[in-house]
Length: 349
Ligand SMILES: Nc1ncnc2c1ncn2[C@@H]1O[C@H](COP(=O)(O)OP(=O)(O)OP(=O)(O)O)[C@@H](O)[C@H]1O
Ligand SMILES: [Mg+2]
Image 1 (tube, protein in one colour):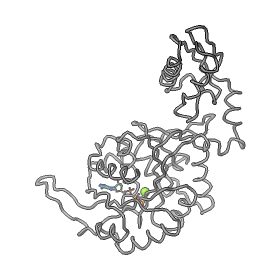
Image 2 (cartoon, helix red, strand yellow):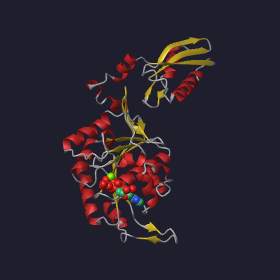
Image 3 (spheres, rainbow, N blue to C red):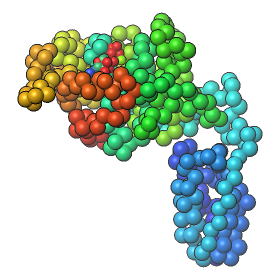
Image 4 (cartoon, rainbow, N blue to C red):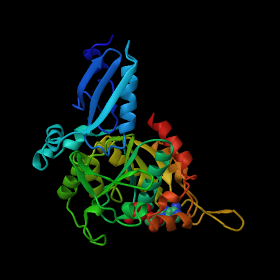
């Protein structure tokens, strides 16, 4: 026969996957009763609409049925009151600042950087996020490039509205479930130019880290402002970046990219995980032949000088550009990017 303490102990191993804490610790287990072979309790969720409730219930049942003598488990689903949620997650307003950070579990922060602007950095950041997600990882994208709404434009046909929750600001979810946060989603007009100085950028980025409820993420891909100049450095310094992916094109001056990137990396003590060359070549739709439109690639040489792997070379592909411009990039099969993601995941391990 199991005791109530044993039942509680068993339930303390059941996690709320979104909050990353166990359900006993979160105060979700109520009215726990053990009567002979029967165990009953109420599971008070933060919201009854919780998409993970079935998985939590099934984990709880499994944990209890593993106890000796337990044959039957009944779970009633309830919801926490607004006061309980506030006690758990803090008061809205000032006191809540930074609360989400304690609830977030972000395994890796990958910043995508370029030597100069317009090389397809946002495009690569978007494809990278998609490719990682298609490998089964939970992925978020933090658009830290305030110079234009490239990321939201790529993932959303219409600018989504951001929602608040007791846990923090909720990122917008793409069609396939990538979580996206962008300063550009907070601007009333997407064409508004954002002229922000360093401290403001740094404050906004810190808020995106501290006040956005990302939940559990295997990877957060950060689209940095272009180049290795001040805004990019400010963002890098405001976030716990684990590694950098450099994006270049054949036009990029190899030597300059190498110099700037390694300078930045050593200054910030952040490793460069790999190099992606974008717009490396074009494929003739008729004969399938590859053309080096921007001249011969220096990617191998650049990667060697940096001492990092060349993760891949992407062709110019007007079909993806069209999807990206229409907010439908997720319709692209990402086959060209699959091997890059695989290599990157191998590098991360
Ligand atoms: N491989 C590619 N094939 C086709 N189009 C591409 C490719 N890479 C990028 N583009 C297109 O080129 C344009 C610029 O790309 P993107 O916005 O990603 O550049 P960026 O480096 O982020 O620019 P910025 O420095 O301004 O942030 C976009 O319209 C994008 O769709
Ligand atoms: Mg960009």
